[in-house]
Structures are given as structure tokens and as C-alpha cells.
Amino acid sequence: MYTFFVTIEILISIVLVIVVLMQASKGGGLAGTLGTSNLGTVFGVRRTSDFLTKTTTVLATAFLILALFINLVVLPKGEGTQQSIIQSSPQPTSLPPGTQPAQTPPTGR
Image (tube, rainbow, N blue to C red):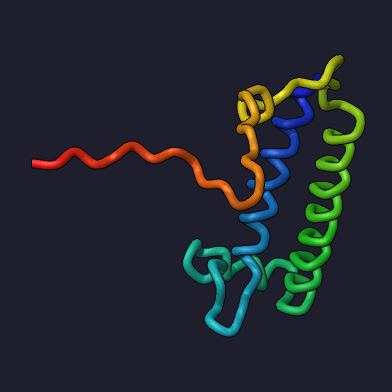
């Protein structure tokens, strides 16, 4: 179940990246590079822009909702709390104020 939803999330993210890159910016976007400039002749320039904007909104919303759903519902819950390596290591003892740790004398030549 978890793998299925993560796979769907990855597919949505890939399609979202492609749709965002296809949108024409001041430089023409990726639409001119990939040869999808003919998409404007199919829908019309204004309708193509509206279509890509609405598609981006729908995909971004689906991405966010699915990410929250995976995190809150599908993600496996841990039964117990696990301590990290830092938490399980012995705690250093604190020295009283005004005392310094013992230092080893340097070896002379």
C-alpha cells in the first residue's frame, strides 16, 4: 500500500515538472525546445496557457494532498520509541564550577 502511493506520488511529481517546464515564459520555456510550440495551434495560444496553468494547479494540489495522506494515514507507525545513538551513549559527568579537568603533562625531548 505504501509503495503504491509513493509510486503515484513520484509519477505526479514527474508530470508536474514536465508541465511546469512546458509553460512559456519570457524566453519561450521548454515548449519551444521540445517542439510543443504547435500545441498553441491546436488549442489556441490563450487556451494553451489556461490549460497548462490549470493542469499545474491540479497536479500541485494532488501532490500536496497525497503527500499529507501518505504521511498521516499510510506511513507505518512505530510501536515503540527508539533512542538514537547519541541518546544511548553515556552522558558526560559535569565538573563542579571552578575546577578544571586533569591534563597530562607534555612529554619533553
